[in-house]
Image 1 (cartoon, rainbow, N blue to C red):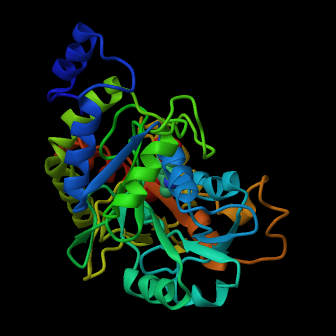
Image 2 (cartoon, rainbow, N blue to C red):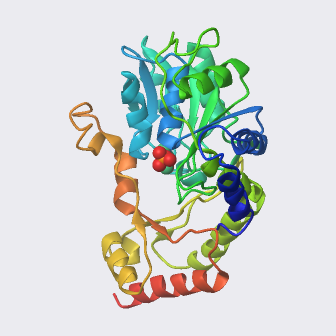
Length: 361
Ligand SMILES: *Cc1c(COP(=O)(O)O)cnc(C)c1O
């Protein structure tokens, strides 16, 4: 949904020649987005994956270290850890929220553990009290992978502000988009300062072209930030739309046998980044068969993530480890169309077609 001030702000960049990574839209976007997350600082960067890498690099995580992540996540969570030279350590999911099972966290802590990276799956926050407790007990950093959870709340606090650093993606299918983009959010001034320095080749202040740290070029352009600022002006509207659409879907789907609608715990406000369902035998059709039939009717869907331990690039590293809940989610889960722009009529049509596919047996 690009119908706000996006065109005006991008035209302003073009007309004034501020098209690179200097320009007024970058700090304006960082400030407004951080405000919506309830934190002081935002560090905009090229995408969500590098936001994760930059956050870990800023915290000094590297070879010999371990970072605990859920196995049920998008590949970038694990890759960001791998880029630093550290090793991802996996935790299974739990069925209530589809998030990392925090009760299994402590067993994964070793002397090498440096950080926990909770990922708020499909917009539902992780149960953070246990994450904080373990982080405190063992002196670990908490870096949120908040790429799917713009505006989600844990006990009244927004994701992105629940750890030492939060990492967002603004890829085109995320709740706020810049086309490609990402941001680190934090309340820690030192983390914000170091992250913005590392993002820009770690240029030193005392002398130009003088580098004391291994930096990166992970900058965002003013053009992207112009889109991001316009999007962020509508932040609360987009969050509300996701939530309204999800509740409407759930009200229509809840009586169809064999479908589990997405969770929302009493302590959580989910933003339903993807409206996700689980199918079981009672539904009568396999997940993949439903997907095929919906596609024939012009309805695009996606199957759930394939867990990290089953990925060809990580298969060897986690050989012999089993994560049964994540594997079950992978087999049974499907997301239905979830755009903020969906109309009630479109949601009704989609649910009608799901019911029809089932009735045809
Ligand atoms: C989208 C996503 C990312 C990566 O973001 P990009 O902007 O595509 O690099 C990372 N983690 C999770 C959980 C995501 O869903």
